[in-house]
Every structure is written in C-alpha cells, then in structure tokens.
Image 1 (cartoon, rainbow, N blue to C red):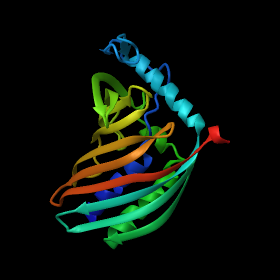
Image 2 (image 1 turned 180 degrees about the vertical axis):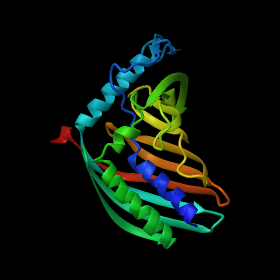
Image 3 (image 1 turned 30 degrees about the vertical axis):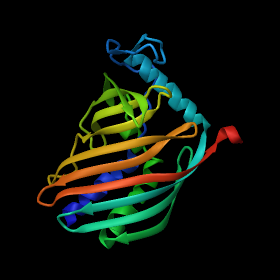
Image 4 (image 1 turned 90 degrees about the horizontal axis):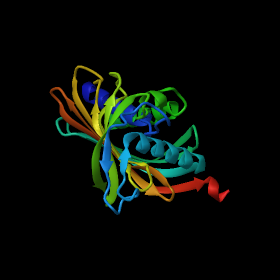
Length: 254
C-alpha cells in the first residue's frame, strides 16, 4: 500500500506544479517545420512556421495573463487502485489570485482515509507552495525545458488545433515526453498529453498524464487532469481531477 500511496502522491505533486505552456518570444525553434492550412484557415492558405506559432502563443498567453485578476473553481479529486481495492474522493473549492495566491476549502471527502490524508491534502499544500517557487519554471512546457516539432492538425472538442511534439531537454521528474495541442483561433493550449521522462521510484514503471483545457470567457483554464501510474505488483493506479463552476475576475471589469 505504501508504494501505491507514494505513486499517487508524486503524480498529485506533479499536477500541482505543472505549468501552462508559455514560450518565450524569440526562443530558438525549428523554423523549417511548417503546416499548410486550407483556404478557410486563419492565414488564408499560407504556411505557418513553428516559430510563428510559438510567438503567437506567447503573445496570447501574456495578453490573457494581463487580463486575469483571478478566479474560483470547484475541483473533484478521485483516486483508485483496483488491486488494493482502495478509492477516495474529495471536493474542493479553490480561489486563485494572480499571480501567486491559491486558497483551498475542502467541501467534502469520502473513501480511503489514507489516500485523503496522505495524498489529497499534501497535494493541496504542495500546490500552494509550488505557485510561489521555482518549481513552476522548472516544469513549464516552454522552450527553456523543451524542444518542439510541429506534427500537424487535429480537432479537440470541435476546435481546430495545431499539434506539437514536446521533447524534454533534460531528464527531470517534472517533465513530459509527449504532445501539446494549440487552439488555432486563440493560440492557447487546449491539451497536454505525455509520459513522465523520469519515474519517481523503482516501483513505478510508467506514468501517463493528460490535461484538457476549456475556454471560459476570454481565458483557457483546466478542464480535467488524468494520470495513470503502472506500479510494480500493484498494477494500475488512476488519479483524476475535474474542474467546474469557474467564476472569473477579469481586469476588464475593474
């Protein structure tokens, strides 16, 4: 059970410190990679380079961040491991004040007391700390931590997106090897998916992670996190966090 708990706690901490894709304008990228848009695309058939895409994403992130004063959200945490027959749930209200304040109120909780006390609650404490520390920079999916390649286009929840390959520049327990989807209309992150490049322990054989974002007013905010850990002997452990009931405070309204 200790191995399962450690796996849950690590991935909860990873989710807590995982940053939003926010590239730095002018960062080195592969200019040769491009995708040809159809005649209805935002650039009327012109090719879009990776350099252009990342610069537009950076500009969009900066604009949205300047407008966002804060928000509240209701989160539902769920964790389960079929082998140990353990599961737990927790409902939390979180208030974020830009740039570095998060407050949590636990609304309800049920299931395994060990998971709730040794996974969920420490994860909330880790998130409060991470928002004020260098861990956010260390985990941000941007050019400081990743090399990117432009793979093509796909739809995510009926919205057209560019798909980027994300290749970590170092073996770090807070980095992923995977893909990132960028909304073609808003130049915002719509999805992140991949595997951790450095596993937390010998007992954890693989960790897969998926985060979907949703558009709330002018902003793109988390919709759902899901991580699946393969733990030696104990098998598959799943942790999900769903985000709902956003209330946004925009500086436009001040």
